[in-house]
Amino acid sequence: MKVLTIVGARPQFIKAAIVSKKIKEGSQNIDEIILHTGQHYDENMSDVFFNQMEIPKPTYNLQIGNLSHGAMTGRMLESIEAILMKEMPRFVVVYGDTNSTLAGSLAASKLHIPVIHIEAGLRSFNMQMPEEINRIVTDQLSSTLFCPTEQAVINLKNEGFDKKNWINIIKNGDVMFDAAMYFAQLALAPLFNVPEKFILATFHRAENTDNKERMEEIILALNKLNKEIPVIVPLHPRTQKLITQYEIPIDFFVCEPLGYLQMLYMLKNALLVITDSGGLQKEAYFFNNPCITIRDQTEWIELVEGGYNVLSNASKADIYESYELMKDKTFDSSDDCFYGKGQASSKIVDYLKENIN
Ligand code: UD1
Image (cartoon, rainbow, N blue to C red; front, side, top):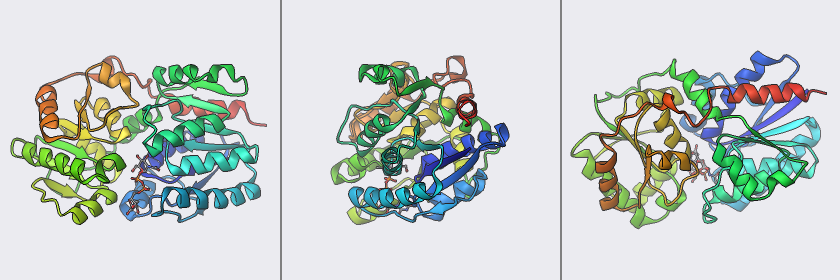
């Protein structure tokens, strides 16, 4: 049975890595074809993930990146359609909420190829975020929705998905949790000296980076925190470009984007995480780090309700206040992990096996 997996952006490589591994281990009757849209293309945003996690080389690489949302999605749609018409897989598998997810689900559903959406049902309820648009449309176009959390299932029910009898809703847990637990055993120290205590921070969301004032406030906050405890920031290319453009002075340590195994090393050793990333909020929790999220909403509401994560305005004062609130917090996430028991990817493979025909 042919299954075509569509990836394009950094977090999708991590999720697909663990599912691909389980497919290989779990069934010889599933032939997985990987299509990389090229949305992320730098060595340290793409290749390093394929190498470190031994993801099979993509059969197709569309090299469509660095374009506006419409142009990127449109070109992906056209190219993915041509490949699907040639391959005619039994299923198309898409992950998360990127432009690659949207293009893949749209192309497949128009060809009546069933779409499996992994990480379905998440909502921020902020339609200004491109990711929110992508995930809502993808859920609508899918035939199977694998939900990472109870909240994701509730969100889908609230939107009436449980009344659509052509859609399967399955709560399987979070494949990112499976990936983090498996690859943490292989964690690698980065090439720079890692201090004993440090804050790990990342930011790249359009809502933070595309607004000079917000970005300046975040940087001022990190500069201030760095006087108390070293702050380490692996910079997303988007953030790097805009920092240079806005000419904002930085006092903390910045480095190129890290590979996943280096990122896991940092997470294992950090004291606290500050981020606007979706994935890193959870990874902070997996490794027992309190987290400050510089966004107005989060899809991972259970972390905020549990006190493991706090939302902060993009303002120097608010970020510092959140730091004061969170810095001494300790917990053990294995006590009540919201994201399953590391079986999320096996459940997806079981589903594929049940549907071999
Ligand atoms: C995308 C996803 C987001 C996800 C994130 C993970 C969408 C709408 N957003 O955001 O959900 O959390 O990936 O990282 O799909 N760039 C490079 N080198 C690269 C990749 C990107 O220089 O390897 C540049 C692009 O040219 C562009 C900018 O970074 O100028 C942003 O890239 P883009 O793919 O638009 O979105 P992300 O911000 O990465």
